[in-house]
Length: 399
Image (tube, rainbow, N blue to C red; front, side):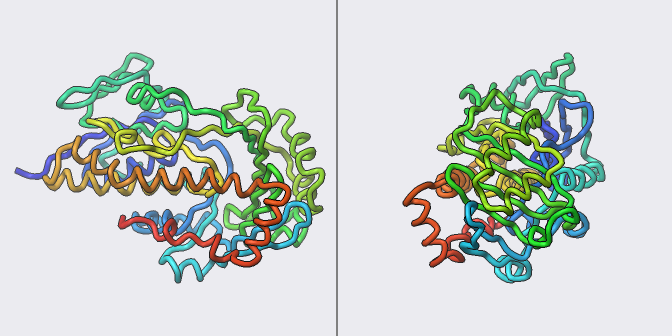
């Protein structure tokens, strides 16, 4: 008798869901993926992919596709938002490849999403369903029945909730309430680099640190565009749960009014701004928050994190790789489905919780003011490379 083929149901259609579908298919499973929107798309603009993520994409055979659309910055630079002075830098480029065996990339979210979508569509064991909002699920000893809002049902051996920050699967599985606002507003813009002054065309990730706010800018789409993110602390959330650029441009200009001329130039150069109210959850406290029985969570549904470590997409990709490894072991007869999902959660929750906690800490450090801000800047000047390099993170896992 040959190996048993597990049939997975995946809720969601974003980067994490598609990565999970690809990893599951590569592990020999069949997959049905359910996306509530009528078309596949990605909200937002840029994202950063450390070597821990690009290494996995390369292992999946997606390296050439990523090379064609991403940018590969030469360094990360921390600067003062008031003076513009360089505080510290971390070399990337070939040095990142030499240190970690894979590059540090920056990309447009839609480009990465498109790469994963194409790879999943090429899998014979994958079925993708659009316009399929999840209503709930029923779990039994032998499988899971997914219920859709339009009355349809689907049966599988396991359900993976990769349906984002406001996960319907998590809501039923854990009943632990909604993600909570962090007290930050994020603004983002895409600017054609050809329209920017030469000083803003450097092939790098720039981070300007200021009191209760910071700005990040990096190239995307092969370096043709600059992705800019402004995060302001202490702003009212205004109930925003999606990108909304009504009034955002004026807010950005006001937030950067006392910053260096470079940041004011960025604010003026952006054709439009999107606005987002950040929300997250406390770092995970155990594997049971990530999987139990035949239900597992992945990506933001499991461990939403603040963007101060630029690891949200990377952690979802790591999750998918570990899920694939656990499912491959199940197919080889080493575990049943609940045990495979428990293995997945056991391997992932502590690392993801560490990244969640470090992201929160980074946000506090980025937004220091007064004497603490001066002390941070001095520390960056003395030990910038050591503080900015993160071997424990960029070396990734064994997957």
